[in-house]
Length: 293
Image (cartoon, rainbow, N blue to C red; front, side):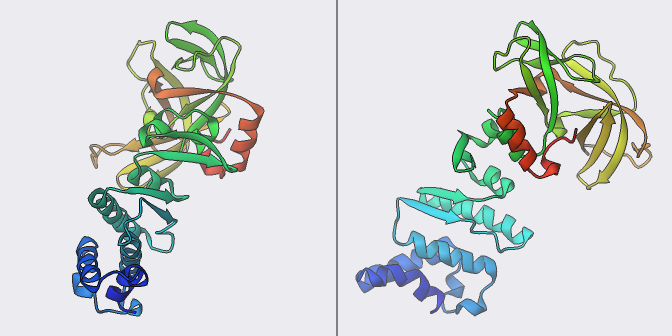
């Protein structure tokens, strides 16, 4: 069938009037920006165009909820990025609920108003993308959404809304105690790579909310917009991401085996109480998603 026939299929089966079918199909063709492709057959379309036709074929029936199950899995990276923007625009125009199932964290974060993170059929957390990323409730959510560094420690003292955490091989670090943990509680301290600063020089700050740790560079990957570093701090392997807000060609870059300092604010780490089930879940995730110990 042609693009037009595919989009009209649901209304034809429902035996709607011809005038209504023509009007609704024209509206859908305009919505997916394929008015000039209406007479083409599927083998004349690109992967992205086929996906748009599939969405239009479903939307023309005016559902209350549209289920999209891994809709972009078969597309290449650039086409997926383009389709994400188009799906978001279509969603804004039609105004119905999209239930979008995906294993791609980038898709989930960029497209969703609310995310449900599931593990073994159970919902671990529901929230906005920012809530899921910045304030995960469990170690599984923290490890599954984005990259993070996990440092095993123990709460040793309270200081107002903050607390001290003892991590083997580190000086005591300060962390915002949003979960009300008490001295003696075992915790994972999770710090996202982009929250950590890196320099050859020790940070010139006497503030108690800056956690500074000496380290040695083990790996460097230049990615254009940013550079990823893996550093060894005592027995802990920590990932750091340095954004290139400004770049000077005459600046001496940080290289493999350099001695450096890494540091982060007390407000940029978050604590998760440690349970055996969390340890088991973390061990089942791909290693690159968990700060290697």
